[in-house]
Amino acid sequence: MSALADFQNSLYLQGLGDVLPSLPTDLTKLEGLAEGVLSRRAFGYVAGAAGSEATARANRAAFDRWRIVPRMLRDVAERDLSVEVLGTAMPAPILLAPIGVQSLLHPDGERAAARAAAAEGLTMVLSTAASQPMEEVAEAGGDGAPRWYQLYWPKDRDLAVSFLERARDAGCTALVVTLDTFTLAWRPRDLDAGFLPFLRGIGVANYFSDPVFQKAVGGPVTDANREAALLHWAAGFGDPSLTWDDLIFLRDHWEGPIALKGIQHPDDARQAVDAGMDGVIVSNHGGRQVDGAVASLDALPGVAKAVGDQAAVLFDSGVRTGADIAKALALGADAVLVGRPYAYGLALGGQEGVRHVLRCLQAELELTLALAGLTRPGRLSPEILSCAPTSR
Ligand SMILES: Cc1cc2nc3c(=O)[nH]c(=O)nc-3n(C[C@H](O)[C@H](O)[C@H](O)COP(=O)(O)O)c2cc1C
Ligand SMILES: CCCCCCC(=O)C(=O)O
Image 1 (cartoon, rainbow, N blue to C red):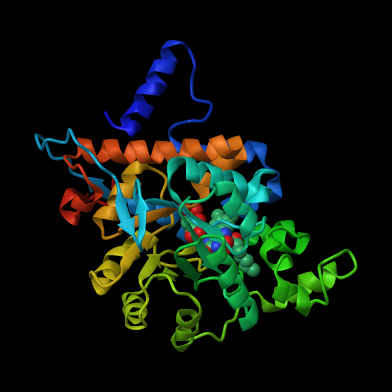
Image 2: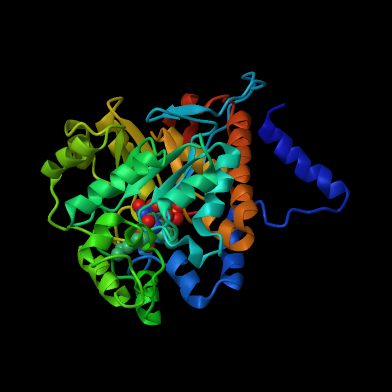
């Protein structure tokens, strides 16, 4: 029996002794519970999305339009979820999406998420906008834990190079470059609450700890230059003038694989491949950037077709269940990134809350595959899906 089936059995066995899981195994319930333990501002920042939040809703609705058509009598006794993506061996095709400002959710912040990811052997993507410096997050995960680095490409090229060198030294083996957030979108929940974590010093740890940033603000950040440092951060966070031609700069300063996050159009995916990128991440940032943007799952098949086998295709935005992961893999993803569910796990239970989320997703994916007649994620294809009628 696999370790994941063991996890399912352990829940039933604990139930015999009236020991029930402290968090629900239906992860869609986490958001409502997290609302109960977070401040209104913190919850609004995490759960919120751009504009009317239509794209955030569309991300979920798109999953519901696809239905799995299980096949029988296919010998699914031996199952294996492992994959290799961008040179990283993964026990399951699931990564922790880069999520900044995690100390909003729990005092242990990113360090707790890193420990949970390491315990499961899953890859965490460390955010530039973390509330703890990347070196501390990497240390919490431990030597040998798989980790990638997500870059918010700042205006100051020297700062970008410094981030990349620090990420390499912290053991990050692949680079994720987020393209869809060179500036914050119109986010009404945060605007109405007058709340931006960064201006309150949450999510700027990688900047404040950086020698290039410190030089620019006249030395280490103290009470005396803190306001100036925050203004400097705000002025240089993103560079809206970047074009495809700038990607060569990243190639020159990062030796490992590079994936572009925020790809939604097949032509952009082709351009990424033509620019020598190793992967694309189909994502609309969990609906947090362009309100009215295409649901991420609806963008996936076109991007996967455009890329073919020339680069890795990863996916995020809206993943909440193992069945969602199976659908994304069937529609062309090599692996998925999970965002808010683990953030809510962190809010509700710290490191163990994140681990609960990761174990549930892996176990549910494995069971979904097996009960659908499949033993490995690589065997998933669109033939396992049917598109549900819209009026139900
Ligand atoms: C609170 C929060 C912070 C985020 N921070 C980052 C970040 O620092 N870098 C990044 O590339 N994406 C960031 N994202 C987007 C996620 O990486 C991911 O694209 C998104 O959460 C996926 O959608 P989901 O939450 O529906 O799973 C953030 C998302 C949330 C909810
Ligand atoms: C100034 C923009 C910072 C955004 C960093 C966090 C993030 O990606 C988010 O969605 O929130």
